[in-house]
Length: 131
Image 1 (tube, rainbow, N blue to C red):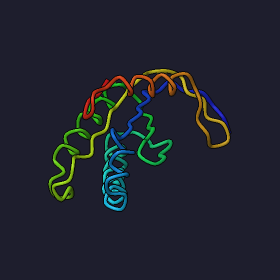
Image 2: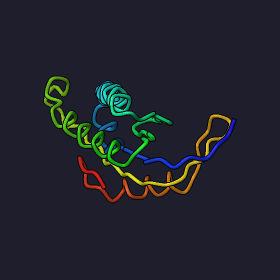
Image 3: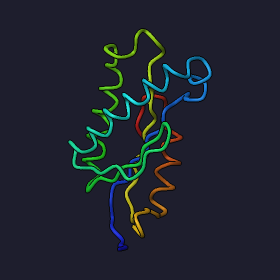
């Protein structure tokens, strides 16, 4: 099944992942796993759907830009309040990019200029920020 839709595309990527892995691989994996679990839960709570999660990044689609933005703000708040699971380590910081555009789904994969643009926008965000 394939189709085209207009969505708010959100791309989030952890800042400094390689550096954190170099300093504490096992601990970083635990913290990244915990953060991605929290992010997945929030995506659903805000009406979105995780399309892809690889390593330290996540791609999600939302029906509207406002839902994507509300999610992103709450996600960053939750990550900033990670004292319960950070063990005094360097905080886990994500950069988030949001774009609105058409996506194409084909054979379980998702494509489209909106996804590439969201990833490029994400790279412009400051650590812990949203663009």
